[in-house]
Image (tube, rainbow, N blue to C red):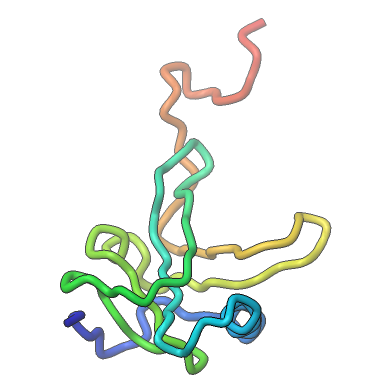
Length: 120
């Protein structure tokens, strides 16, 4: 049994919710499948995220609804994602899910502090 979160901790945009519903339909998945959002790592430009359809919530997951869909986030990721929005984009940046997270700012873990810049 998952631990319910009383507020919408992470919001889905209408566009993201429509894509999730479409993916469930394409894959013949019923409404027991939730959208799982999780942090997979961090780079100089911020967190990296994973998104999957999942019907096996864990006891420690945060579970809530947004745009009529169930959303699951693991106990570690939720600490860094409160207030985030999951959107779906199809523009010059590409096509896919985009997590807008107000809790992260680009950081540089390079020793020089000049990630991607030439030393010349």
